[in-house]
Image (cartoon, rainbow, N blue to C red; front, side):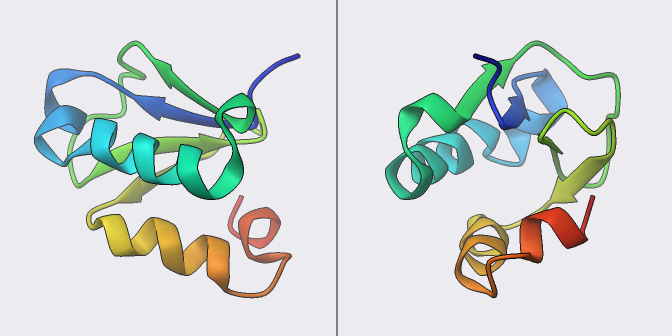
Length: 81
């Protein structure tokens, strides 16, 4: 089964703590829903996060951004992509 949340591990995204964001998401969403992937070629402005294989990439700058998206209403993740 494909992961629903993909997080980039490229050098630029690592600088924005993408791996830490992934670990937080795994705690909140479950490890089957989160996957670290090679560079998405969407560098700059934050860690690249792709949701539900919809093709759009979010740029998250703070770990709290992840928690906000997950803790807001249940449709928040679908609404942003």
